[in-house]
Image (cartoon, rainbow, N blue to C red):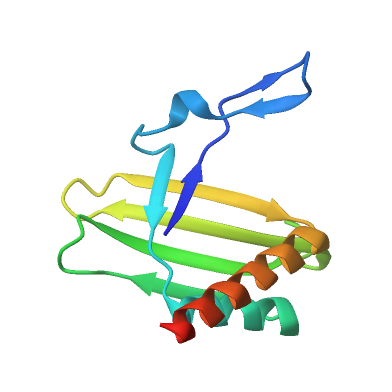
Amino acid sequence: MVSLLRQNGWNNSTKRPIFASNRGKPGANIVIKLGPPELCGIIHSINSSEDWKKYHDAPSSPNTSSIKFGLYRDKETGKPKGGFTFGVLQTNKETQQKASILIGLNEDEALLLKTYFVFCLNKQFDY
């Protein structure tokens, strides 16, 4: 499971972002399930620098989710700027209310994420 939480402030004294008050708020907190195929898609994206996309629409879920992982790109030129982005757009099937969260990762963070995903896949194979 992945829980994405929108930043809602900044603490100047500690130089750290503030997230806690957004926990559980619709539109500011997105939870999605990533299975082995999704983990492998993200690993492939990190290895190849190719964009990866996935669409989730489970009958038992009240939401649909569009998931993207790929190179961080300049908004105007579309050229890579270094690092990666991980984004989720979630839409409530009933109300059509949308929530979107985008997270930037530098190369070191992407390598850490890849290493953790490989670890998770290996643990799953052990079972």
